[in-house]
Image (cartoon, rainbow over all chains, first blue to last red; front, side, top):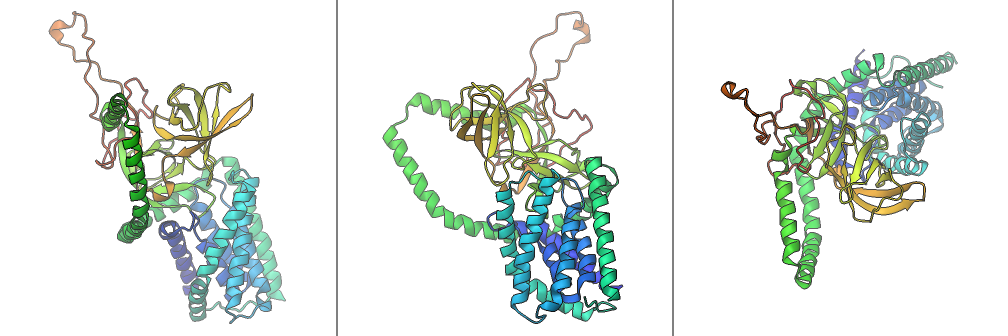
Length: 169
Length: 328
């Protein structure tokens, strides 16, 4: 119960920071995707099941804060990424410094790029493929910059409020 | 093993749920039950974003101040160059007089247009980098409705796409889903301008043979009673393109969308002058044709920012909402 509230609080804070704080700290007009980063950090810490739950919730939150329909694209992309990170987690050194950076970079490119392509396919975005690629790379780099702080915070929180059953996949 | 299977089943179930959500919302076109959820999220986040924005304002001003400091030297250099050019050119008095008249017209436009507006502060951006919208701190409680036009000191900002009680979302003019009827200010040629995302806006003229040049100003057009008031500056033509069948151009917008702080939502567009009062004793007499200038419905965001729209006395109301109130 408390863990659920902690996760909700983390996602809520990430959403507020992403929509209110980081627009003023945008690099070249691009902002980091903190909700995606939080999803990846939780999945990396606690596994695929947590990645699924958190990814779905974070993606749905991001969808609901958008003005252009349809809702669900971010939820789909985030939960798949959360699950995938959870699945590959055993193959990564959990205490490694480089693993969070590599994960933030890779998931940033795949997540943002994936959202851009799906949104474009569904007509929710008119962004060109070039713009999608450029956005994905810049946002992924921004996410990578923030990854050490976000991963450390979530590792600490999740360590204090661990899941009831460890998911080892 | 059990956990792995459980995760796979959950993955399939959640993917299915998201696909259902996408389908339902897509078919509803942004309405229906999902829209209610979206409005709820906006209602919850709006006040928080407002509070965070207020807390961060001094920090933001400080950061902007640093940026301005660095650009000040460049500005001084550019202005000095401009002064030199002007001295060399010795612009004719008639040109200067025309320029002065134009500036005077700009300064007086808000009184003359009779726009009823609500001042709003930009309090948030979308979580996605592919959507060019902002959240502002006024909503239906302030008289804001969907499709109302949003402007700032430099020109057109966008239009309202979602309005809740305390906040609204503005689709910016640079979003690729944005389109507006416009005209070339100098020639009056009609066209449609669409957002270009991080690239310049795109203009397509109705008449492919219409004369247009780089540097021409583009303003909104209320052609056939469209959404936008006539004459709101959009930008200038940056480059020409197209072929014999379609004439296109790229437009560099006036507004710096990375530095939006305060905007005006046009609650009601330019209004016609009220009919003159009729004296009962002279009811049978011929009514006078004189009219008083409107201006009672005007409220502007910042007294230092002139309204961006040029004077016009014959424009139709954008949103005839008699109960709407203005606030500053």
